[in-house]
Image 1 (tube, rainbow, N blue to C red):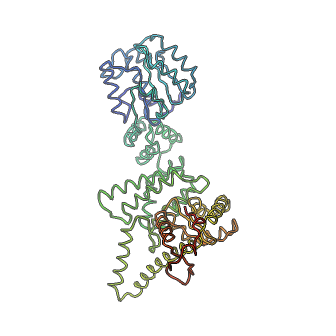
Image 2: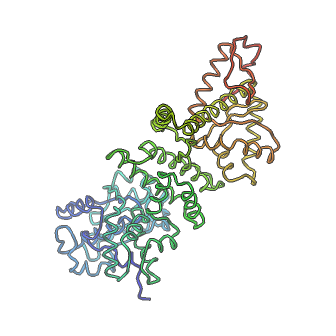
Length: 534
């Protein structure tokens, strides 16, 4: 078997071929030139960034008979026979993590080098050692023989005891830059006669997430069929999504093309694209657009705050998403609100845009008296929004009329049971899983959502949710959803009304348009000990 995988074939054997770690390489080379070799080093950082490779090159360089500017010459007997050098000992701590293995290593530390100046011990994934093994290693690091050099490599430096860290020179490896990965891949493709598109190179570099080894593994996999590597091939083979597709997805939101947006999202779902990878890319492209807006000003419909909200919201979704809920449904709800068709969906924190919309509508009314149809459409839109706000106010009021602790406890148990139902519609389940009951009466419930952007969508689906509650667990409630900020305001006002002896009265939802209040004795209406709000 003569074939060697690309990441092994093209593993750097000199400092000059190690990419994106310039500061570390310069420091190590200077220590060799100045004959200032430490007895212990720790290389930390993400996978595939060159930690073990750098350790091997450093081990070769400090034993080289004729180092050139701190680098191994590649010509002396030690450089030529490096792979067979018995003075270079590699240990995988993931599979040799016990105290017995470390004690065996310590016994060998006393031995002098067979050929070179140093015996070098490279311990990979050192954070996997047991506590007892670390304690044994510590004794050697405190008083090591002058001919011994330890290089500890780890992807999780936080799990390495501080007593070990304090006895090592620490170097933190950074993720390799996308441009550096592209440059390296292009050179390899030319040498291996691999046909590849430029945008496919960039996509592989992005998918590697800063790891050169991962990039070479992907290139190896995609080149097996012998056909030209394109974005389409990457998307079909790796089940990923290109940056161009993400750009199209956000452009559909910018241009309010909801049909194409939903079609593309559904296509990604059917293709099995990993939702985490998809969300991360949306965040990245949104970040670039936000920075462009800050630099050049807003030239499209969505502004800086919109993209900032998308980034924060999707980051929150990524960390809190429930594996039992369709991830694409949550993503769909998160992004659909940024469509502003017919002024029915207005993103939170986008008040400036809303003010501009309202001003434009009023301007049309004042300057186009001859266009009665346009005026009617405008007034209808404004009145529709007024009615919606009033409907929410009425339901809040009616819930407060007889809100009690026992109703809240009962409702929480019912909603917990409802959340476990296997028959829930995907969108309803996503909303309910993200929501909490904060106050309850005998007939009304008030919910808040952890993700405030889902509130508008939830309130548009009230009938569906109420009918679902009745079908699944046989309870009937009138419900309403509030954003956390709105709920805090309503809760404070409710407490204030209690203190001021104000009474809430039931309001017929279809006949009235504002809440009525009148002062009476609080004891005539409320038993404060029975009331609980979250």
